[in-house]
Image 1: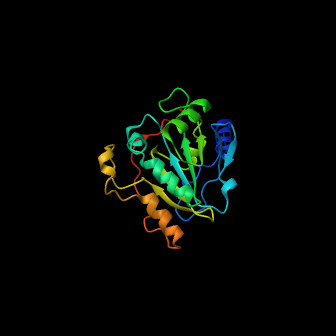
Image 2 (image 1 turned 120 degrees about the vertical axis):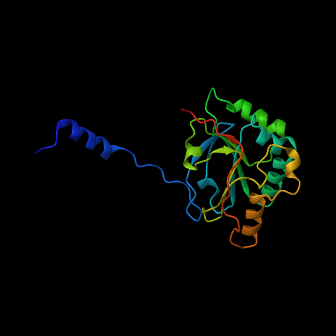
Image 3 (image 1 turned 135 degrees about the horizontal axis):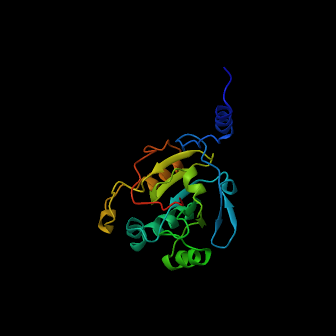
Length: 203
């Protein structure tokens, strides 16, 4: 018995469907991306080939983000890393109309007003970069080594609270990963559970 016309249409639809994007994996190449910064300039991961890169998802309205920026802690981490030659890219994946979204001019103002020392603040309003990395929270952190391999992903530290007092004595996973890379060691803690506010994606 031949397939019905409806069954054939269904099979064709399945054949044409795009395969699901693979989740990012430690030890695998970091997903490639291009995003626009607050000045309207396209920046890509490939632009920084041969350099260690930190990716930080942020949302200015998130109490967990405010814990790190309000205390100056995130800015200090950024400054120390970039002074050491690391590229630090801060990303905003909040969709238009949702909490945390900023237009380019607002992004520039926020970066200046907070004293952020990141290499660039990238805007991802359609969530393409965030979804490629399976970024879930703000902050959600990733470290990419000089070979373009993902070597850390997860929370910024081991204190999943918005209380600034928790920063004292916290084990910062990003700092530890960067220290391991600089020393030529394998990253000891390559993944952890991210914490913070959920990213406000479109749809």
